[in-house]
Length: 117
Length: 115
Picture 1 (cartoon, each protein chain N blue to C red):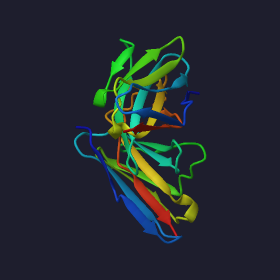
Picture 2: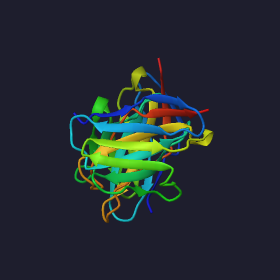
Picture 3: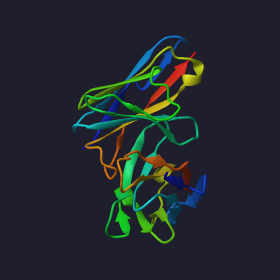
Picture 4: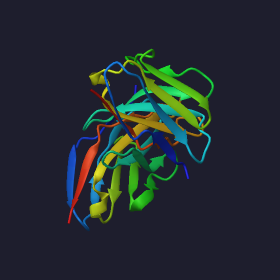
């Protein structure tokens, strides 16, 4: 149980285009989903937290107009990188949890490798 | 603000030997502590967590971790390492109180088990 999927697993795009990444909880309803970014050989950095049906909460320094997050249902959240640039190239990982409590385990998706040319 | 330290970037052990991956934390009040493992180009897999109760927590794949409040540590251990345990390990913390629910991750420790 507690499986989270991401699509696509990797994407290559041209600079200036937008890319949408989907995160789905396959066997549970995720009240809260999280989006992380991971650079090579580094830890995960939280970008934003989203609750179903409400606006995402972004971490300091993360541009909300550039990284659009939608959490329209209890099983799906999307991250859209708008007008992508090479510096946006990274490994994007989502996670999901049943509720929003700090003790709740976050279950992670397999990640999406974004390369912007 | 909470923080997590994993003092070792790299840990090498021989197959069959016990392994320890170290983690110390700093948080206001009591913590929730987690260990995750990441294989190359994959997301994180949950290993175990400490919420309350017994200081020794048992998790997936034979791993366990010991919560030590006085030393603010939560070291990951396994009695007998396997080559397949080679991966990147992350310790994470979230605070017990307040509305904060985000995990703060350590920098990760690359574990290599040598055959």
